[in-house]
Length: 106
Image: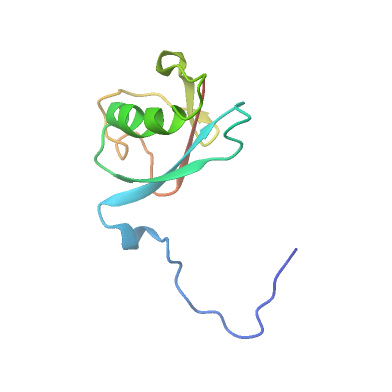
């Protein structure tokens, strides 16, 4: 449903990239898991390596599902495209920007 403001709405977004400095918001979705029906959002440094992001952020979050096996995580996607690149590259180097959506299956 469309909402129309009755006045000029001239306020900047509270979650714009400039507000987070060297950090960014990254959304993570576990495709096909009924326990996690939508993406979770994490504030992480842009310079964090993908491997560190997965082990320290994603695995901790996904472990709340008792069936989670960290070794079964596959098919990483950035939005709708397969994510390719090194585990030791930073999120920024992999093209993972502010409010990007990462998804995986396990």
